[in-house]
Image (cartoon, rainbow, N blue to C red):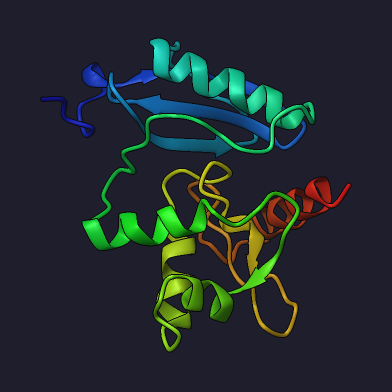
Length: 170
């Protein structure tokens, strides 16, 4: 059994995109996290088949040739309930934007818009679980964790969310 808190058990394959550096992180069997920053990482990659396939699918996504990911996923730190929300999130189609309230309704919890927002803000695998497609009912962006170390309300994260929405609108 791997331990996602021990870097000796994690596998990574970094890639540079127009949106910054991304680093799929695998536990050897599944994708557990997708980190994202603007500068890359100092430690060398330790690729495995899952991190390499995630990198390839992200490259295809950003080149416009992939709209739906097909990867083994085990989101780090998510309970069964959290995984349920993320599974529902994964069904939001490419190029579609919905509100937190609509997301809650899709999950069968129509009064849980705040919970929907919390799930989005704490998504360990952004883009693949497309939390960027969920916005406020009033049309404002809301928050976006986006795999970075910044707070979900940080302007860099919100800029990335807006850019992803724009990217998918073409």
